[in-house]
Image 1 (cartoon, rainbow, N blue to C red):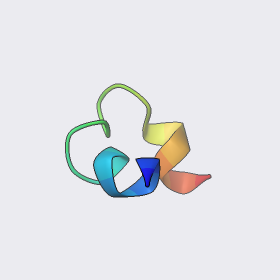
Image 2 (tube, rainbow, N blue to C red):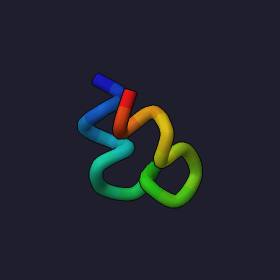
Image 3 (spheres, rainbow, N blue to C red):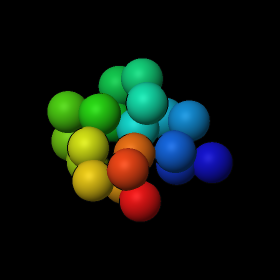
Length: 20
């Protein structure tokens, strides 16, 4: 769920969540 957002906009807020 959060991965989908982190891959788009959250990437700037939590790029770590995108990898995790």
